[in-house]
Amino acid sequence: MTSDSIKKIVFGKPLKSSEMESEKMQVWKALPILSSDALSSVAYGTEQILLELATVGVAAFAFSLPIAVSIIALILLLVISYRQVIEAYPQGGGAYMVSKENLGMVWGRLTGVSLLIDYTLTVAVSISAGVQAITSAFPITVPYIVPIALLLVWIMVWLNLRGTSESGTIFAIPTYFFILCVLLLIGKGTFDMLTGSLNTHPIQIVPSAMTGSLTLFVLLKAFSSGCSAVTGIEAISDAVPHFRTPSVKNAKRTLASLGTLLAIVFGGVTLLSLGYGIAPDPKGHTSVLSMVTEQAFGRGTMYYATQIATMLILTLAANTSFNGFPILASIMAQDKNFPRMFSFRGDRLSFNYGIITLGVLASLLLIAFKGKTDGLIPLYAIGVFLSFTLAQSGLVRKWLRERIAGWFGKLLINGLGAIVSFGVLLIFCFTKFAEGAWIVIIVTPLLLWLITKVNSHYDDVAKQLRIDIEQERVCVKEPVIIVPVAGIHRVVAQSLNYARSLSPNVIAFYVSFSDEEEALMEEKWNKWDPGVRLVIFKSRYRTIVKPLAEFIERIDTHVSEKQSIMVILPQFIPKKWWHRLLHNQSASRIRSKLQADKDIVVATVPYHLHE
Image (cartoon, one colour):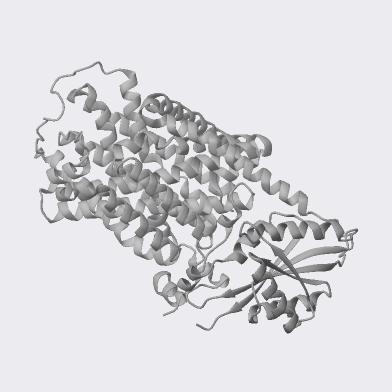
């Protein structure tokens, strides 16, 4: 079985570029692919609010509902704002494109960096929360949190490398199953509340009285922790070109569906946690959603179904990033703000470099934080709220400049969105700084500096490669060709024949390690008489590369301006991979050394071995 056939089995058969339209998403597929991040936040958003309020006692839990309402209002504001982003920038790119075109490239890069960081953290947080759903239902899995998390990450990598259309079909069923389970949970809990049949959850984890003052700082910390529910909204605006035609209309419908569902499930679970008297597990092994579900349904079929659905959607929530990160990286690469290979599609029309890079970065985070959601949350959402702020500010500037029909209403919406997003960003930085937010605050400018250097490199390369087609003419230089030889055999003969077809000035170069070896080679060469001059260099230190470099320097001093130097390397290619380990690969070492010299042309003449 060849490597190509294995690749087809694992990743699917290659797709033609003309099949791109079939890979684009309908609304029913786009919702699970691009919205699972935001929808899944119901699994940990409420819990993060309660964990902060628990520090001052049970009575503070009453504030969880007003905080949730504030977050829902923020979600709806951002949904309205990002519908305008979709209308204004149907070519995709979302916040990055808005910031770049209206605030300048520096702000665009900052937005891009912020989103890439947030996408990476989204994968880590979603996967870790998904594993928490597993440990809630099956405590025996607690010692294996990190291995399970890494396994889930690389399953996501594999599915996304197979392509959007195929992965979208796989992702749709668990997402809609989760929505159904949570809606049934909210329905059952609402019925319990209306009929007065609520179970009372005993509070043992936190003190029964306030142990500290409920300050504005505590409320702001709870609000900022709950704002993790807002992440993921921007992914739809990034991916507008990946929707089926009409792409703008379908993207807006998907965003509206997301906003409605998110408001219902996040608000509903927060309400039920308050009604059932749920207190969070400080060890993080049992989730609040698990406890709410157990109170509503008991530990029966619906409980385990909801836990499995939660685990699945939290794993799939990472898929929002596996779509958003590669798309954004490809757009930034096209602008020369990211390595160019990130703009290339693979055999399955997916951005392979972006997908694999995201998998590696998320895995490193999960290992570093031991798969703990609580440790990752303080790093989370800073990037996305920075991008929210810059995107809304960019649109404000756009409406002020263009003043199209209805511009003032758009200005008010985006202006309010910018102010609120900036306020949340400040709250997050202030309240979460000591808990880990400082890492993101330091890493963001470092990455901004790095991609600025990437852009400068590409600009420098473009300047050096640019020619004036009116004046620049192709100038043919007759090369002096040097062919390093290790003996007399078929590969050498083939290389010399090729060299002589290019130029009459061919020199064979041989390195000997003893007088006897030198004499023997000279005798054999004269007997063979290929019509090529042989130069023998004796190496006292048993190296090949350095003598060749010194010989080339000598030749260079005698070469005229109308001539160039070319080195042709004979190299045989073994049929089996392990055969390569049996040879010294001197051609590769010579090539690496000579390619550092700007005046040398290096070519390889391969000879494929049959066995």
